[in-house]
Amino acid sequence: WLVLAQSCWGFTRPATGMPHAPTTIISQLASTSSTETKATTSQDTKAPPRTGFAQQLLDFALASPIWTYILVPQARSTMVKTAEANGIPWQGAKQWLKENSQQRPILEAEYDVPSYYKKAFHAYQDGNLNWDAALEVEIASCSVGARNFPQYGSQGEDAFRGAFESALNQALAKILDMGCGTGMSTRRLARNFPQASSIQGIDLSPYFVEIGRQLLDLEPKGFQDGGPWVSNIVNDDRIEYLVGDAANTNLQAGSFDVVNLQFVLHELPPEAAVGIVDEALRLLKPNGQLWICEMDFEAPAYAAQRANALLFSLIRSTEPYLDEYAESISSLFDYIQRKFSNATVVPATGRHYALVATKGSLHSSDGPGVLTDQRFDRDGNYRVEDKHLKVWESRQ
Image 1 (cartoon, rainbow, N blue to C red):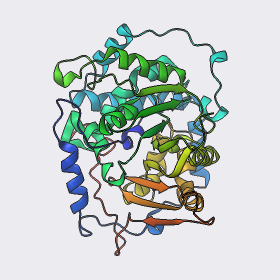
Image 2 (cartoon, one colour; image 1 turned 180 degrees about the vertical axis):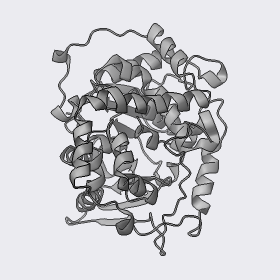
Image 3 (cartoon, rainbow, N blue to C red; image 1 turned 120 degrees about the vertical axis):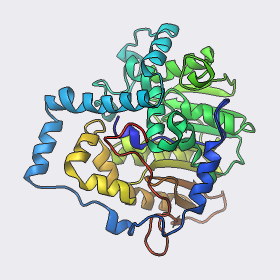
């Protein structure tokens, strides 16, 4: 969950009762000058792979019971403390959802997931295949937002997700939200794109999908409006949740205008990420778009964090594929460039990028496309200032 505190994303339109913080954030991002952030080029900031005896000891610790009894509780404690310090009712919201939803036994025979998905993720030994993870994921995301935009406190999640809208094309009809979890990103897509005819979310976890469906039925109000939940939820009959593998959806080829990937790739081994990009390309209509937002380990803040072996090992304790992801970002960009007609990468926050890749038309020629990387200015500075909380901080 410490790494969750570096992540999340979405769009600009605020939920009912929330101030228009995202619009402010977007204007701040647009006006950030090259002198505001003292960064260097992506090649200079990228942390080298860690080797040697000390790293072997850290890797051994992550594979031992220390992971379960020390590192994971510490990661969880950081997230809960952040929530409480910012007025987010972690325990109360979880208890409300637990009492008002049904957690039926789900047998392994009911779903089929790839082997990488069975590893421990975040603060859960069973990863995303359990009810606790499904009950807490949206609460944890609010805590994440408070860490990413501490100046907005409990409203930081809405501000953070709003920071990515300027990279997106809003002319669309059908949207697929891959790795939708309990539907936070899916609901925001529905709210921000009323012209879309359908918004489908797909996730490997039947627990997450089931909670997502029940939240739509419950339609709770957020705690800031006197309700029991962490956000306002309004049912939308355009939303449909599916249990399935984003790399093999069995959905009709060429049927979507947009495929959306919000903080999914860092939880995958690189080969699985490539498989999902391939499936997204198959599903998109000609001139359709793939939207990606992810952690950027070529950003100075994350590169410095990764260069600290001890600190990064604490973060990595809840994210089994994080190192592989960090090493594969450039390769992933190259792969997307080869597969799509054109793509643009921009900094969304001081630690995250947004990428929009457009599929070629039916008449476009084969061959590599063009990828425009706008994360760094001409002086090598990362274009957005990092304002994230330090690991030991709970609020600004």
